[in-house]
Length: 391
Ligand SMILES: *Cc1c(COP(=O)(O)O)cnc(C)c1O
Image 1: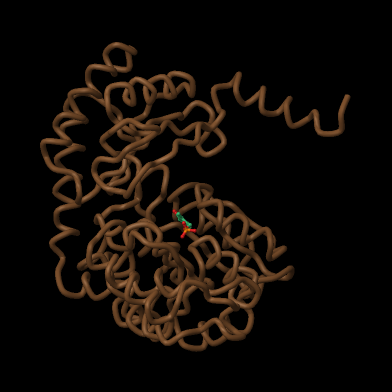
Image 2 (image 1 turned 90 degrees about the vertical axis):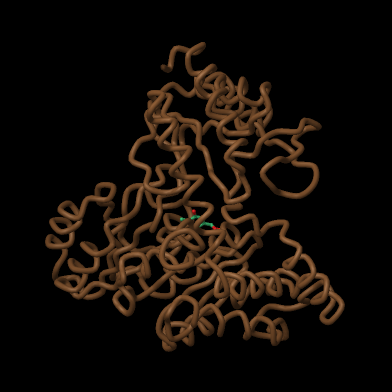
């Protein structure tokens, strides 16, 4: 026996259960069609909702930023890492989101790790939707706060759990805006109402709502017209923005506080000039036109209507994230493998990302897909669905 043998045992166990993640390698830029492990395939699994990941305007903004600022930040934001571009991005994001202020981080994951431990501690309590993203869960754990999980998108359950804790002074309710494995949307108006009743702080992670929901992609708060009613918004620039980075949006005192207390801001280096310049270009582009957002939604209704018509179970999706429910993790893996052989890249998702009997193929739609691409994909889904007796 070797002291690291447990690693092999665990990897073997994952493999047997059909849960071993197969990391594919992409050669070349993101787009509707990509080259994966040497094979050209239709891409149905990127978060590149609006096609910005390889947009010529973003590329040239990044190149220009490198010429001006070089490649590396060489410091954390609080020492020598903040450049004029970070400030410009934060100003423009605040206007775009309709908030007083924003503060940017290295990623959405970092934004959650920054804000939750800064806001709550041991004495407090967090109410967290049971399907919240891993970065929210980790942020809560880091904060050492007591975590009360409520049923997914169930305001009644939230209400009764918060009522039981009504005497705790600081209460924080956290929800994903759009749930990343289901594609459904949090009942934010009801959550805000409950929060007002119990004087709780509200926080929504808008990672998959950014660039997707609301007017011109302004996100979930705009979608429900709840401006000024959500205390903390988390954003990411790694999804629809097509780049990388995260941010917190809200009151100026909140972002001032995170400048002092957000540990990833204080202890991990700044995002590079090239990335920040590309993000600024996205905000400018979304301010100018909502054509891409509209195209994304027309692709979404086309694909989902057809898939439902054929008989696929798409769960409760309301967005371009689409679970094609399979059930068994091994069958889902098989489905994904067959799709890949036929030229479609759509990954299967199993436990622990989703519950054990709810394995699925997760399809992500994008404005870069043409209707012909999607019609072809639908035919293949039907063919494989029949051969594996899903339909
Ligand atoms: C993807 C995602 C994140 C992480 O964002 P990154 O910028 O990729 O780190 C955080 N929260 C939710 C809900 C997400 O879907």
